[in-house]
Each structure stands twice: as structure tokens, then as C-alpha cells.
Length: 188
Image 1 (tube, rainbow, N blue to C red):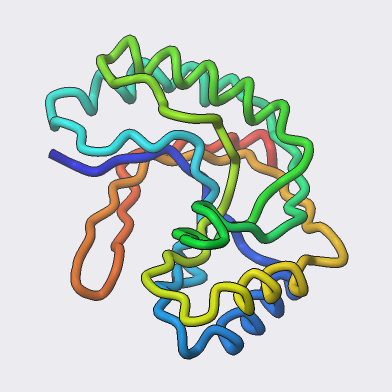
Image 2 (tube, one colour; image 1 turned 90 degrees about the horizontal axis):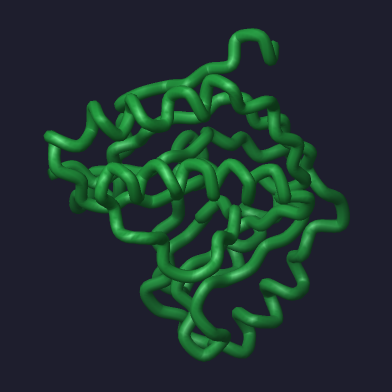
């Protein structure tokens, strides 16, 4: 079994890098597992534990979709949390203008269900996970910090490359390995 997901690599601009540094500095007494900058990605669909026998069929089913997909333009414009302000679990960066992402998600979702995956639970929220929260000492202060650190400008992203990733959990955190790339060469 391999733990799989579809995603694209994301690089933060100076503005978002600065926000992340301030966030790390101001949460140094909290227990947060930060995602290394080289591992930042926008997840399209998390698949979870996948039998080896399904991987080639999965790739075969989604390849035509990724090959035909035009470049998607997004604006990263906010920092937010999953969970509640009383029990936050994940710190993430969010987007506006994600209608094309939702359409791509729906196409991929249909194919992964055809391969035998369970339907995605909950709403599709395009995001970049930047930290996984284990413990926050002062939740009110943390909530205020998230509000204070909202970006004053957005980062434009042109998404033209998708990958099937494997994630391995280990005692150092998460290790990512690309199993398959779909790269739109004509997008460059």
C-alpha cells in the first residue's frame, strides 16, 4: 500500500515567505510541524492508502485529463486554519479564482471513483498546507496572530504541472516522492 495524492509544487514569493517566517517566530512555544519549503504543494485530490495493483490503472485513467488541462491561473491570498479556533489542526494558504481548479477536481474525482476509490469527503478547498498543529498554548493569541498576518497582496500562480505523489510518514515528518508527472511542455 502506498499513501498517494495528486498535487503541484508551489514556491512562495517574498511576501508569503515573510509571513511564514513571522508565523514561525511568533509560535515558537507552540508545537507545530512545519512543512519544509521544498515540500510545499497544492493538493488536488488526496487518495490515501492505495494498493499497488490500482496505481497503473489510476495513472491510465487520469492521464488524458492532465494532458488536456490548460494552465490554471490562481491568486494565493490568505492564511487560514482547518479545525476550529478552539482546536486548530492545520495552517494553510488559500486561493481566490479557483473555478478551474474545481472543474479539474470534479473530472479527477469521477475517474478515481471509477478506479474504486471512495468519494472525497467534504468540500473541495484548494490549499497549501504549511503546518500541522499538535498543540497551541494560547489559542486566543494564535487566532489573533492569524488575523494580523493576513497578506496585503496576493501571489499569482500559473499551474501547468501535476504529479502523483507518494507520502511516507517517518519520525522526521513526511517524505514525498513523485510517482508520475504530467507536465504541459507547451505551457512554458
